[in-house]
Every structure is written in C-alpha cells, then in structure tokens.
Length: 556
Image (cartoon, rainbow, N blue to C red; front, side, top):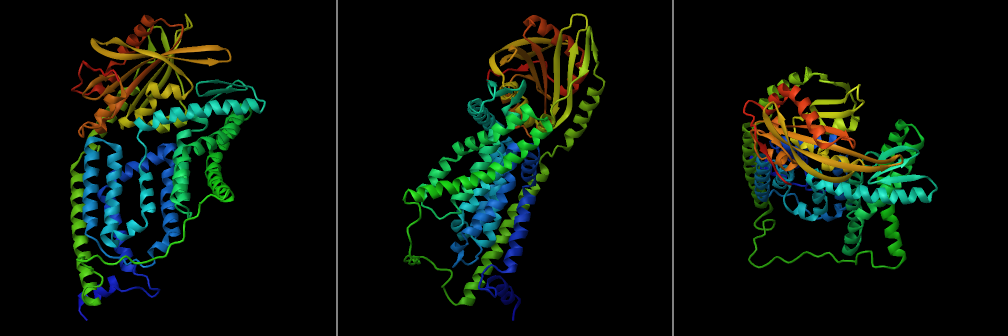
C-alpha cells in the first residue's frame, strides 16, 4: 500500500465507534490551534493579563467551560457530520490576522483581540471544516466573550449599574430596619462608608450573568422567542443578583471586620452565579406552568436534496477517490494556514515589543527615588492606597503622599502614577474614579501651571458628597503626561497614544493633587506649582529627551 493510501486511510476512515474524528485529525487540530495562538500571542497574553488584574474580566475564565457545555449539549447535531478540511479556513485565518495586525498597530483593543480569536477559528476550520461551525454556532459565538470590554465602554456602564444598585440597596436595607444613608453610590452604614464599586461591582455581575444566560438558553431545548426573552432579561437579572449580593455585603462592612466583609463579598459573587442559573430554571418552569409555548415543535429530520449543478464531493467517484481528494484539500489548507500563521508570526516579531522602553521605565523609577519630602513649609507623610487600586493600575512608579503644614494645620494629598501601559490609567481618571467612589461631579475648569518655565495645562475638578457629618467638598487638580508629547488634559489623548506603535510601550503618567473645600483656587495652583517645581527632574525624565513644552489640549 502506498504512503498516500496510508495517509488517506488515517485521515478519512472512521474510528471503531463510527466517529469520523480520528486521533490524527484531533492532533492536527490541536497543533494548528497552538500555532494560531503563537502567531497572535501578544493579543492572547494581553487577554490573560487583563483577567489577572481586572475582576470585571473574571468571566473570561468560564468561557472554555461554557463552550464545552454548549458543544456537549448540542452533540446530536453532529450525528451525520464528517470531518472534512476546508479552504475557507485559510480565508478566515487571513481575515483574523489582518484584523489582529490592524488592531495591534492602531491599538484598537477590541479589533486586536477579535482578530486573534478569528485566527483561532480559521485554524480549526482548516482541519475540521466549516460545517461543524455552522452546526455548533452557539458554542463558537460564545468565544466572543473572550474579549475584555474596553474601558471607554465599561466605565460608563459600570457607573450606571452601580448607581442603580446603590439606590435599590438603600431602599432594601432601610426596609429591613437598618439606618443607611446614600450619597451617589456610596452607602453609609453604622458610620462606615461602603463604596458600591468596592463592595460589589455591578459590571462584573453583568458580564458573568450574560455568559450564564447565554449558556443556559443554548443548553435548553426551547423556542427562539424564549431564548430572545431570556437574553433580554440578562441585565435586569444581573442587577437583581447584584442587589441580593450587595445587601449582606454592605451589612457585613458596617457591623463586622473588613476581612470578614471581604470574604463574604468574594464568596457571594460566585454563589449568585449559581443562583442565577436556578433562577433561569425557575423562570422556564413558570412559563411552562402558564402553558406558554416554550418547548420547540417536533421536527422530522431530512436531508436536503442536492441542487442541480452542485458538485457533491462526498459522492463523486469512488469512495477512495473522495478520500484522496479530501486529503489533498487538507494538505492545501494546512499549507496555506501555515503560510498565513508564519507570516503573522514574522510580522509580529518585527513590531515593537516593549523591550526598547525598559531602559526608559528604569530611568523613571530611579528619578522617583530621590523626590524631596520637604517642600518649603510642607512636610510629606506616606499614604497607602487600596491593594485593589494598585493591582488595577500596575504602576511602574507610585507615590502617594499627604503634605502637611504643621504651623497652619493645612494639608493636601498628592498622587503620582506612571504606568507602562497607558490603558491602565482609565480607572484612575478623575471623571471615572471619583464618581465610582460616591462623589458627585460639580464641574471642571482648566488652569495654567508653570513648572520650571514650562507651561502646563491642568484640569481642576470639583466633587462633593453628603456624609452624616455634613457636605464634603474636594478639588482635584489633575495633570497627565505623555512621553515625547507633553502635558495632556483628557483620556482621549492617552488613547490616541495607542495609535502610535513606537510610543505605545512608554506608557503615561498622571499627577493628582487633592484639596479640601477650604482652599481657594489660586492657593491650590500656587501649591501645585511649588511642589512640581521641586519634582522637575522626574518630570523631565517622564517627558523624555524630546519632551515638548506645549500642551495637547482636548475639551473632551
């Protein structure tokens, strides 16, 4: 028997149990999937990094399990399916690589991640064919949940959901007989302030619950209108589960140790995921009890007749010729796929990988070590930040201080953050950060600051929140710096940095000064100029040798 015949037999003959997915096809599929992930490894590593540092992306860990669950439940769809190579896989992989490259160069996170996922699907189709994707499309659709939601979308949604959850939780806890007050999404119970963003993140619950609902509706045999209804109810269900989780969490923070409350907060998150599944089962049972048409109509399976003029690869010629033809298609698909993935890998190797910025970040760290702790009459005291905030920022440099004038008793806080990844600044941007902690924005105005004969534009934000002791008012003067660019005034400038491949890995820096309501505007600006004047060496290093003296002002 010739070598071609042996290869044909291995790749096309069914196994002992009648399955056409032989071990050779499985090995080939795994190898091609591995090569696809290696070719787009930077996007996959970025997804894994986001999962590690951002709890709102923790649902990504469940995606492989949900994929396997849906594929297993719908395995009857593969009863008469034969594994056949498809040249369509090359086209899909090529489109995925193009999107991956475009998203990489332009720093469009969603496009970048989607391109990597599409490349993975293309590698699968090359070996197993397009028919399996059509039959198991809900399982492949769930792969879209592997893409972390970008901050520009996530933060506005999170603020809305947190505000709704805070209002509902206040009503429920008061109805239970507890004294609770609310300012924005900050709840005060037993004189202990609980920020909704810290106690129970609504965005995390929404992402997780949508994934659970998706797994449920495509695991149960129901009519299409039921699936659409349940998917539409995912967000209200997430808010309900968030409130059920939030009430005991807030009470725990108010009446028990923070360590105990943190433990309750973490465990209730996973408990509510399980509870939501049973809620969906209960809702489905209720619709059946109400005699609603939930279950699908019985269908009689039949094979569609072959259209006239259509070439039937499976039945054309002898079985041996059909098998040989399939082998040649597989060989062509594999060769084309390897060429596409090899090209992607080579292109990825030629793109900047951040190694050139390592020396720069080391210089920034060294410059931050010797910052003066005494500036005129102001003495600095180190202030700690929450561990969750530090983990989310992943800073290269983090300096948190409170400056005090012992003679007058006045004080202000200063926070300097420099991150290697500019995207990590999104959560620390004042319009995102302070409202999520219960502050209400009062407005903002630009202010000109002179730093060692360099003009910089800062933004002076006003925030307030109602506490039991009265109204609390603060002003936050914020400056952001882009290497080789200058001082910028909004996150849109930071995002634009991502469109420049050569500058992306140099990150960005942010300087915040927080004053209480007793400070006049000019006094605030004078103090900021005084402190930053003593930190000129650090600012010069952050700006880089080509740092500009101007600003990139942006009203957005």
